[in-house]
Length: 235
Ligand code: C5P
Image (cartoon, rainbow, N blue to C red):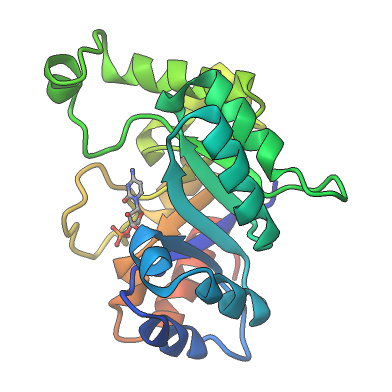
């Protein structure tokens, strides 16, 4: 699996997103993450538009429903020609298997599918008190990642600081997609467990997801290229 930098296009409209992506015309085409806000607001057309410009797309909708619904929904998303999508591992192995089944296209291809283990916004305390899930949060992350692997998924979204642990439990080929990336000389914003692109590379992340350090930069193309240099080790 080739490593890459994914830009989180957390914009609220198609117009803002496409204006942002215009800046990258003529250069390296970034792998783009589309989240719930943009997809629910702009609809599937935004996926087609970005795809037609030659970008790869991670559709970050985090499906979590009964297996039959997830299977049928994944069939719809797969037809959009996306490159990566995700589900909540909490939906169980059966649900994750259904997701993979739904994604397989008639020609046998399918997008990469990864699972969310525990959201990084969930503290260990809340996991115990509200979700009634005991034990250490890191053990839950590893167990959910193992469930995802058993279900035939390709990997998980996790904190870069959890990537090594997940690889150890699920194998080096199991993909880790890691948000929470900041340049060494930048503000953390609301992210807590962060690391730099270079450190994420050392830890073994396969894909880093970078939002504001690129989207809010004075020169987003330069910031994106800096991420690529630091993460991919390119000159
Ligand atoms: O702007 P920033 O680089 O913090 O954006 C990170 C992106 O990754 C956002 O789209 C955020 O929703 C997403 N994300 C995250 N932590 C997770 C899962 C997704 O920050 N655990």
